[in-house]
Image (tube, rainbow over all chains, first blue to last red; front, side, top):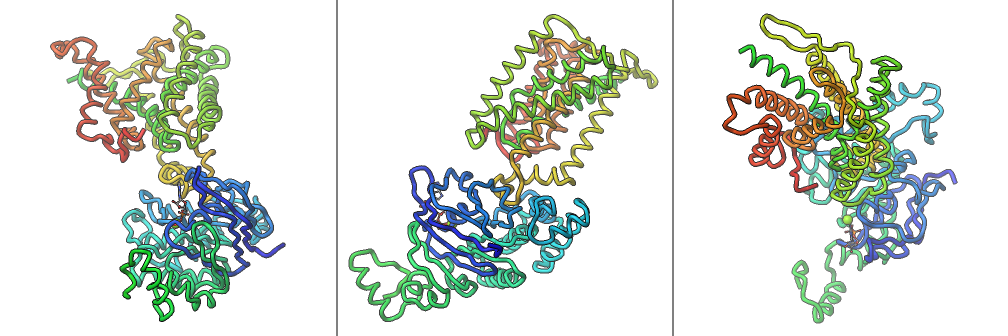
Length: 288
Length: 296
Ligand SMILES: Nc1ncnc2c1ncn2[C@@H]1O[C@H](COP(=O)(O)OP(=O)(O)O)[C@@H](O)[C@H]1O
Ligand SMILES: [Mg+2]
């Protein structure tokens, strides 16, 4: 298989006695944006950590199933090796290096991007011709120019400490830092969380643009309205299992998704809510 | 006045040597969040190798081998002990380093015995005289070497990929790993660098006016603990400041012992710790630190 598609097959994962994912399968075809929706605690971050091999940082572990990218097994690699394989995650809560400057954050993003040595799919030949260090510097400059093109503010703030940026700017930095590694697949964990609508819309536009430039995206979101507009297909996770899956357009009009994740109350949904409310305390968000 | 200037230069010189040790200590803490109580034995390892070899292969080659030896011992401690407990409690690791320290110190104590090993350094007991001020050449050499090494280190920390990886890992291990930073390598290089710096410190702790390397040399190394803590355990600039503060305090307290005799004997030995306690009362994270000691 040459296409850079991600296949998550039958993954079960957990934290000690807690089972957070059960038999989850997700496909991200080459060049696609795929969304994973779900409420708090549904297992979205766990899914991304299972792909990015960072479960151990949270006391978790993969218990079963397989993850492969472009035909190559990822489970078994160390987190740091994923970057060279072309997969980069932007973690939940941005996690920029707050005490480092914006410029150094972007430098850090390029640390794992190995040129020819590791035989990356794109540019490998050219790098060998260029010769190691120079090729790497050249590619890093190109990646930096691309990131500055997407986020001009990161150029203006280059010498500022990342911790002093606004939430929206930190999210841009987190995205830019990930792009410095020139990923073929980007894993995004709730990139619009906590952002004002304007900033969230900007991030959404950028994700579309990054994808148009040739990077596949696996997007995890509680904000279904944003995610379903970006994605071609989507999955809904509930307590660690895939409850729904299908083309994003279909899910966007399905009653269940509209009711649970889009906050839309139509006739039938209101009736459903009514019948539920007899047994459960009424949720304030839904005016009866 | 002459005494004061001499004490000040001596204090700054010793302080810069403490700063070398403290810097290694801080680098290990930043990279692995481990308080390395085995630091004195890294120092003794470097000094011992250099002292044993200098009679055979000459001073400079012996020093180079001593530095490499201490770096190797540091790397081995990381590889054989610290790595096994990765992800474990940092306090457990700190205690593990106490174990390492006891083992290594016991071994070096046995090897050194009652000997006083000299390093055959080129400075000997020569002095430099500026007007009425007399300073041993070794003190000037220590100051120059420490300034050079610390500058080189800080530049590397700020500008090289190694430095960026180190700072990224220090701040957020998971995010660094996601950027492709190999945490194992970062940790290994931190221990090796700390060992190398400690070996250079060993040299300047054993040259004139000290008689040579002996069992008690490791006590001198312990002065670097208050230095690192005064500066803030996770601050490289703090290690520098802390080292100088401890060096000067110690030199002054010893030099003016007679005038300060109402405070009791052995003030020079205690003063660094008193300063440390005072600093911690005012600033629990040290002068430049961001993390309080309760974290460890
Ligand atoms: N570090 C952890 N230790 C123990 N349980 C965890 C940890 N992280 C998440 N969980 C549990 O795993 C489940 C899934 O969490 P998570 O993947 O973070 O959900 P989401 O990202 O969808 O909000 C939840 O029940 C959560 O409580
Ligand atoms: Mg989450």
